[in-house]
Image (cartoon, rainbow, N blue to C red; front, side, top):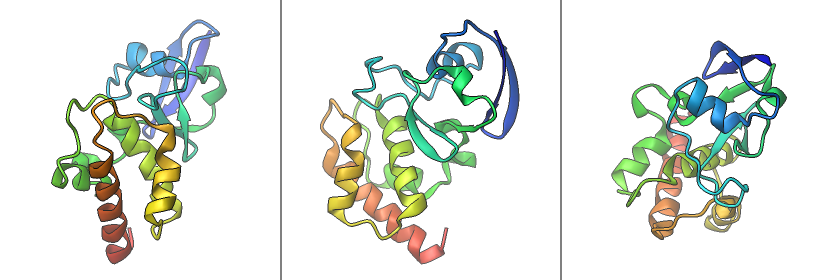
Length: 156
């Protein structure tokens, strides 16, 4: 099945099976390896990407469902890792193994795009779809709070 997908602002034409998930199209066809396969059941969040600005589990979304929509992966979130979340992730030294981090950042980016005033409780509730096996949750929350503050101050 031939699909036309808009990923990170660029048009891509891919020839895939009808049931192909967005995750595998991104990784195998487009060679965008930042989005990770974690569980394959929408239970961990490692595969999180944005479709029309909303975070989705790419392991569960058929690629055909994303035709005509704007898909953003961690690679397309910013140029040179300049997004306030990516900067805060570095400053707070969030990653331990790093495997879940792209999904964590994409989920947090969705929240801060609409709510730069998010309370700690709101952050925790929003992020509860994403698991971190290494347990870096305190650093994740601090990084999100720091990025939110930076975004408020600079009106990003």
